[in-house]
Structures are given as structure tokens and as C-alpha cells.
Length: 376
Image 1: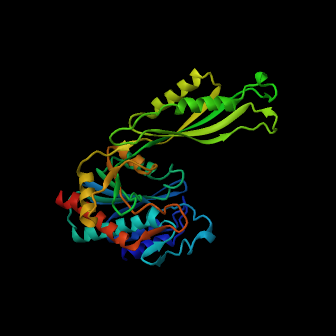
Image 2: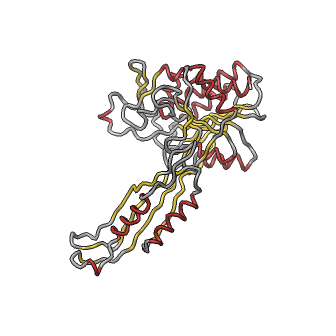
Image 3: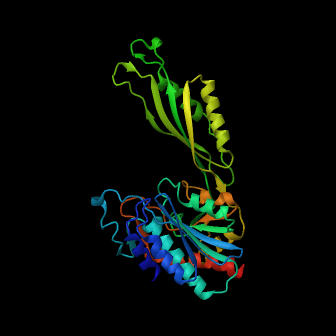
């Protein structure tokens, strides 16, 4: 099965997160035929697949997810989002770019690699989850915990997230910012709007807090990361009448932060500001991911070389974008890069990937494995 055919077969399985819809069973069958030992790992409602060929180091693992976001308004799609239609050289469908196209390229690169190099050094692996687009509690996070508990590890990981901006391979992500959310309640004193001295408006307290947090940049970034950002994402306060100052406000904010900070340092900074402003608050924290950075080494060198040979581009090494499952892999001392299709259409209606790019991506993945497990 060629890469386009495999991508279409995966898209035709409507695996809206956390449902896998048989995608991993299809992939496991192909990897079994190629001599991989495949192991389904199910946690809660989430299907995961761990496959490995060989036990020795160095080990290269390709990682990705079969789950997709919902298609959105069907009437806005020019084709059925799960029909995997090919038109004018592009594959249209939910998950085409994020990331069933990458999965197909990875699986076929692995199959072709072991067929050409049956006695390659080290090990080759595949880690797939159906819980990347959702809560991400029972996916790659749990798989990595399971592997660590039994003493199984690997050295290099290529995540197939759609990293490219304008052309395939123009951007390779070598890290991600951390994500820290605060879920806060500010307590005031309810009262009549005509008697403000008898009330304490929590919205005014929030305004002071936001002003203090945005008066100066949190930091200026560094060589690898852009500046840390602070954003309010949800605010609600309503006493139910237009002439009543509410007595309580609930809000949520988020930091996307670099390795300049730890999440505990950011939490302490926020709470210090709140206390200095004498704001009566309750605050819960949620860490969605820690920042990570893969420094220049064998994996980044192999990835840049493979992209250059295939596309003629020297990819930018970037830490931009949101979070990915790389945040669950890197803490184990594993070098992680993210390389995949153009991301312009991901999560949108009429999601697309170039058929030619899928074929080139397979060759890039193959070449990375060759450089690390044959030539290196």
C-alpha cells in the first residue's frame, strides 16, 4: 500500500478524539508484516500502539496520533471530510495534514527501511496515540510512563506534527513552550451601582491585575524561545441585574512560557502580584506541558540534512506553536524534533495536504532513519 493509499484509508476512519476507529489496527497489521513487535496499550477510553523492531541503541521512534478534531460545519466542506477525496493534486479530508498524512509517510518509511536494511544497527520504533487532540491524559503520557516503568527507552524521536509553514520542510520544531493555566475566583462585595463605596467590584480588581501583568513583558525570550506571553482567555461576572455590582468573578488565564521559567516560579510571580494588590482570590493551576528544547546533535543534524537533500531547503529550527506530545517524551532525556506537512489548513474545514508532499515526506523520514541507523 503506497503512502497516499494508506493516508486515504486512515482518513476514511472517522477517528474523532479520543476514538481510534480501527486506525491503529490497520497500522499494526502493516508493522507486524515488517517484523515489528506491536503492542496495543489501552488506558481508559484511549487506544495506543507501541511497536519496535530491535532492542539495541540507538533507537529512533516515529510518534504521532490517529485522533482528529471534529470536522465542523459539514456544509462548509467542499467534499465529505471522511471520504479522503483527491483533487488537483491534494488530498482533502479531516486529518489530512494533522496528522494522518504524516502517519502514512512514517509507516511506509519504516516498512521500506527495514526491507532495505534488515540488519540495521540499533532499533526502530513507532508510538501512536488516539488522545493528542483531546485531554491527552491517557495517551503518550501513559505510554511513556509504562515504558519507563519497565526500563525501556529510546534516544531519538521524530513527531509528525505539521510543522511546515509555507513549504514542506521549511520549519522543524526542536522544542515547545510550556503551557500554564490559572483558574481564578476573585471575591468582592456585592452592592448597588449607585453606592460604589459600599461595594467592592471584582472586575475592577481584575483590571488592576491585568494591568500589572501586562505593564512589562514577562521576559524577552532567548536564543531559542520567543518571549513568554500572558493571555486572559475567559472572564465571567454577573449579578443578574444591570444595577448590581457583582460580588464574585471567575476567570482563566494562560502563560505560554520559555525555559527561562519554571511553572512554580511563574505561579509565585502571579500570586505575589495578587497579594501586592490586596486582591481576595482563590487560584487553581493546571500545567498542560513543560517547555523542552532539543539541542543541536545527531537528530537535528540528520533531520536538517534529510530535508535539504529532498527539498533544497535548510529548515529553520523553531520552538513556535502550541503544545504537542513531544512534551511527554522529551522529559525522559530523549531528543525530539517535529517535522510534518504545511500547517495552514489544520483544524479548518477543507483540510488538505499535497500528494507530492506526502511522498517527499516519506523519503525524508526514510533518510533520517538511514542517517541515524545506517550511516551514523
